[in-house]
Image 1 (cartoon, helix red, strand yellow):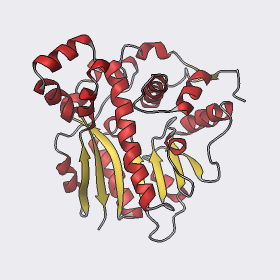
Image 2 (tube, one colour; image 1 turned 135 degrees about the horizontal axis):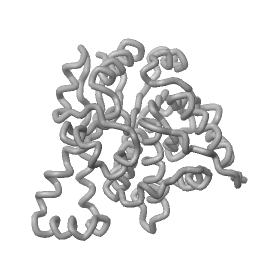
Image 3 (cartoon, helix red, strand yellow; image 1 turned 90 degrees about the vertical axis):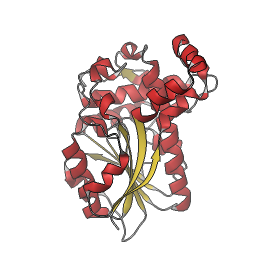
Length: 288
């Protein structure tokens, strides 16, 4: 039975605090009549936390974008699992991500990697909600993703299929950090696919205008306009997929504020131009 005592999360600042944005987005979506993404675990977790989520209430764009992104990544990862049911999946910057419980991961060995204080919060809040899902297969690694010794914690057999995910993370790293991370993954595990999302350079310059990130002390540090540029970061880097997930904003105009509904009807191409390239999911093969 879930605990009635709140777990404090008021101490988080900077990038670790942004995990509250994605958690809030999924929990609020789960409460809708016809949700884009169902996440009962997120809805349970948010009830266990002592944290002021009210500062994100006006962030309609971020809330919608987060759940669309999560849904699209879920679909890609689930397809990978269907093809490779005994694979290893590493989720970097996991925060309070509940993807392991959302997907059919019966035989998957799943690793959630994040800062020690975030992993400690994860342990506390999952315990308050009835325990960590699939503890035999869901492993927690309490290290910064830029402390590359996290790779030593991954138990993988020779040539065992593997995917690395980092969602809502790349924009808080510098270009040099992102490049170093991908190159280290290639050197240690390649060839594998790394699935992550990126923002445009214009969006990366606009932290202060972001509807939720601006409510924290985190800052965007990197964006990229052409995903194919990633292929220049290392020999054997191949762009395998690119998905402009924010175009799904227009799937249900009733989800948009009145002014955007009007613009979408009068100038239907304009919202697509503004939304489409702001955020993308990319799948990068690292290694030949």
